[in-house]
Each structure stands twice: as structure tokens, then as C-alpha cells.
Length: 480
Image (cartoon, rainbow, N blue to C red):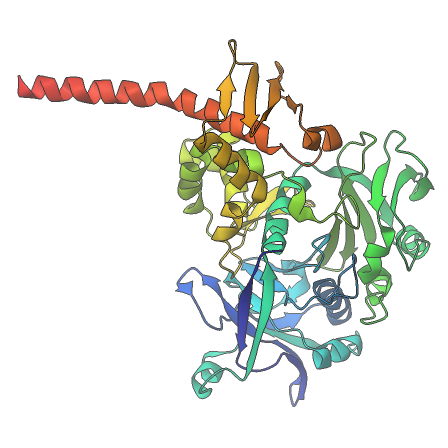
């Protein structure tokens, strides 16, 4: 697996501190992007948590996911959570080391008391002493929250006191991009009240690998089913909801004490395993875990971003759309289309491309994208995608030949050929083993990608030729 190193530099460790004014949850920040540019240790919030106990439990659950590997658990992860300030909320995000579970805590304006919420994205330090302190926070006393150091703290330190250098796999970066594409296809499938939510979650398997299962709405709860009946939701690896159930290392089960409801999001059941999102509604907050279609199948290989990355227009469109984002907590495709002059389809492709650089997330509860900017050098993750790289190599080698009519193409690979067919609805199929195994369920194969690139270039060529002819005519007229 290709990976790079990412360095954290914190002015101090994050901690829960006792003082004359009460308890403080101080979260140290490391690097990140703000409206004023890159900042070493940005400050995004200073105020009170309206409900300290559920906030502490939910933050601990996000940290548990960041430290976990649900597939091959003997290999421990060590990536600190990401926090984004969107002006009206704070979003804490993490990804498991196996890339199969994405966690996000949205602390909404109702969950914060006082203090202006800034704009930007950074990492926050979550260490073992902080984990232990979070488990001891109760509802009785007010809790002050500071995300980042104040100006005096920044100027009083000569250098970073806490430095960490951790491996950053490219598949982890791709997982963030794939998750927002997958989640954009989800719909609300079930909503359970608090008592039923607790009962259902506690009935799930707690250890081992539960495999891929299904649950179906039954009145006010969910019941297990052996097959994807109408209305069923895929629950792939229920043990991966451990951060909600109470993992031995972190006590994440404290979340259930404060649950107001459980919402489940997923695509329409097709009979094949799918990803799903499990959202616990808390006072002024939402904690969401999104599970990949199988515990052994990380989001990084889903291939949902590949079609957008293969088009030349998406790269140019992404540059235009990126200047319109401004850390908005809710990005509407229609509004961006109106502001940019692009069609909604091109805006979606541009957002997908921006997602590969960590600039876009998707909120299933609000069915809307949001802007964040991961503090990693993520641009190379797109170029390193193996299928995309292989498709471009096929195009450069002249291996793609479109047959008459355009519905079928032949791709020559070494001493054999693959045929790519496109139906009237635009769906592609291929004769290769990848397509035979996944039937498009994990994105296009390299042959279909290469064919798409060639078709896109042929569509663009006439326009370019026409522009060249127009310019030549104008030049000739000026000479006359």
C-alpha cells in the first residue's frame, strides 16, 4: 500500500482542565486551512457545550473510530480526528485505519453556548489521558470548550511541545472522497425512537465478524432478516457499530444514554451488499457512522469518483466551483449551478473531483454537501488511483478503438481484447474479469474508463477545431 508521512505539531496536549471558572475541554490543533490561508495552530471556537456529557461521549466515539481497525484489528491506526468549523457548527470527522468506517459528529449551533464559530479545517489531538478524562465528564457541571489556542498561548510558546509523525495511506485519503459519493445516494430508510434505538443497538453482535446482514423496518423498530426484502437495509458487519455500543477501550456506549433517536440511511436495496449510515440523534448534535458494504472492503476501492475524474471538464469546473465554497455548512448544487453558469451535472462532477482533495463532504441528515479542506497533501491521491492510472495508460498507448455507431468499443491489452458496450441509458458493460466479478458495483473498470476518456476527447475536438477556425478567420480578416 502506498503511503506518505503526515506530521502533527501541537502546542500542547489536548486535556480536560479544572480551574476557578469550572472545567475546560481544551482541544489542541495542528495545521489547517482558514479563510486567511494556512495556519499552524488555528482557533475555531471558545464557548460552552450546551450538553457536556453527550458531547464528550460522542467525541470519544469519533476518536475510537480513528484509533480502530475493524478488519485485521491487530494493526492499530493512529490518525487524529479532523474538525471543521462551518460558521454555524463544528464537525468532527475520523476514518478507521481499515477505511471501512467513517465517523462524523456534527455539533450544531443548539449544542454550543456562546462564542463565535470560525471557519476552517484542522486536526485535533486526542491522547490517552484525554480519553480517560472524557469518560468522567458528567451532566452536572458546565464545560467550556476551546478548539485551538488563543493568541496569548500562541505567542508564549517557542515551538511545538507535541510532535507526531504517522503514516498516511493513500487509500485513507481516497476513502474520504468515496464516502461523500456513496452517501449522496442514500435516503432515510428508518427512524427509531430513543427506547427502541437503544434496544436494537444493544441486540446486535458485540464481537467477532458478523458478516453482511440485513434489517427491515417493523413498526417502530428494526428486525433482522436473512435476505434483502423490500425496504430492507444492509447492515454489513454490525460489530463495526462498536463506537456506539461500547468498545472495551473507550466506553463509547455512553452515547446510548443520551440518544433521542436513531436514523438509518441507505440506497434502495438491490440484493447486493451496500453501504449504510447510522445516525444517533443527540441533544444539539448528530453522531453518524457510515459502514462500507463489507468489513473487509474499504471505501477506498468503491470507484464512485472515477467517472468524474476521467473527464477533462471536471478539472476545469472544479477550479471554478472551489472559489465559491467558502466553508459553507450546506452546499446546494442548484445554487452553485446558478453562480457558476454550469449545469447541475457538471457541478456534481466538479464536487466529486474536489472531494478527492478532501474539500467536500456529504451530510446525509441534510441531504447536502459541505465544505471542508483536509490538512493533508491529498492532490496526489487522485493520480495514484490504480484504475485511473491504468486507463490513462491505455489511452496514451492508443489501445482504444471505437466501433461504428459508438455503442461498442474494443480495448486491446497486450495480446487480448476486451469489448466495452454502452446501452441507451449510458450504462456500460465490459467483457473483463473485473466487470464479471463486480458488475459495476465498485465503479467502472479500467477499460470502460479508457473508453470514456476517448469519447470525451472526441466530443471536445470539434469544438476546439471550430474555435481554431474562427480564430484563423479573424486573424486573416485583420490582416486584410
